Length: 200
Image (cartoon, rainbow, N blue to C red; front, side):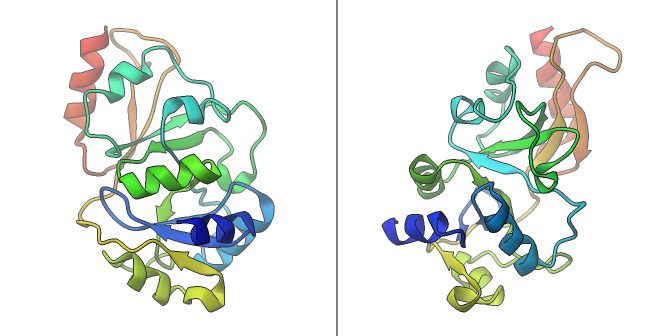
């Protein structure tokens, strides 16, 4: 793990396991994001999310609504990515209208972000290509060490990605101020709304 930590601190990338698909991580700083978007061949208008070990860790970057911790408790950890208002003006590649945050489920991934801080949490594949379930194979396909991509050994179960939602800053029982699905994923919309109603 220390080798991967040093790698990330040097501005390079690391593929790590999540509860769905391998993710490729970079520190949320310019040089690291430059490399990430180059390796993934990802357009800069498609922002990446941040993987964290807790909402407390995320609170350095985003404002956390009071009800969010309880809401997330209704779902398996890592199954939702939540768009939240940033505390500072982030790099455009982290989003302009909010910063998407995912609390990581995999223990190795959680240990990694505890050591280096939040990392980008985007699928470990070139944009438009189907991702591998093996972190090592995903890293190799992206060029491996020669391209600045290290990895943590692990195999993910695959399947649908996390569900991306926006989250309101206040609780209301109806109308537009409810979570909205921005990307379909492992948690269906009806389950998101069902959990929201428990808070109102």
